[in-house]
Amino acid sequence: MDDPLAFAHGWVAAWNASDLETILSHYVDDVTFTSPRAAALTGQGVVRGKPALRDYWSSAIARSSSRRFTLERTIWDPETSELAVVYISQRDGRRVRAVELFRFGPNGLVVSGEALYGAEVSSATRAASNTACQSLLRGETPTSASRKRTMSDSSTCPVGT
Image (cartoon, rainbow, N blue to C red; front, side, top):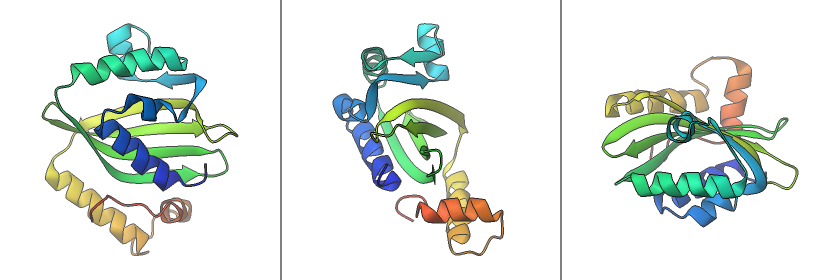
């Protein structure tokens, strides 16, 4: 993975455009994807292979009358080639914080992914998260050194702050 932040921006843009082929272009053919929504819809929590992932996401795109992802931040671990993309998912009037976990193979493509969904968030919650992230990147919040390094290295905070 050459540029985790660029990957995250491209991934969010592809989802916002409902561009399934661009989304899938980031994944190996034998990808595994884990999601509680997949479990709820298909009875299986793990989707195996790009054709099955295409079917699952095509159905998900068709079921949603509106969808907008807003990138909040990324966390990149170069030692394990794993990326966490933290974003707000606005779907059909609900705003939920979500995290997508990606593990990249040596060819730079995603070999496995996992979607995690949190509670509904308000604008006030997002503003507090933005402030905390900006403070951390400025070095004003002395949390763990490794967390500060990871977040700073990925040069991330919410888009538009």
